[in-house]
Picture (cartoon, rainbow, N blue to C red):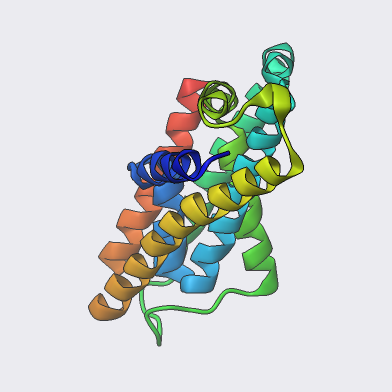
Length: 202
């Protein structure tokens, strides 16, 4: 990969990661509720899911995704149900909190990673996207270990960086507004809506 290829791939991934989506909703709502660590946990899950798709695309396994369409349907259903469950838990939480942001437990962080991973893996189109995007920047017929490392690093920095910016912005807004029940319910409603949308699309 040349420097121009790296910069171009980075720019494309940043632009796509910045677009409003269910992953952005999940990162923002978790960060507003549990702080930057909670948003970072979801971001880690999203990046892990992206790296799975990158590996599949670089391995020329886009056909495998079509073969395992039923499995991806199950993952999408699980991701949708998970988001709905998280939204309901957020909605039912007591309105009065002593602090606007409660630090997440280890279990909460693990749940955030799993939620981000499941949400990303539920998007079967991502594999097709990576399979069609990466050949524009990487010669898959002559893929070198250096190219592989570059793609992984670019994906982590671009996608992870954008999602962390969203998380930091959500945390700042939550701290400025304080423990507002209305804000929490908006976030909960967004998560339930995102989960429902995944189920409908399935």
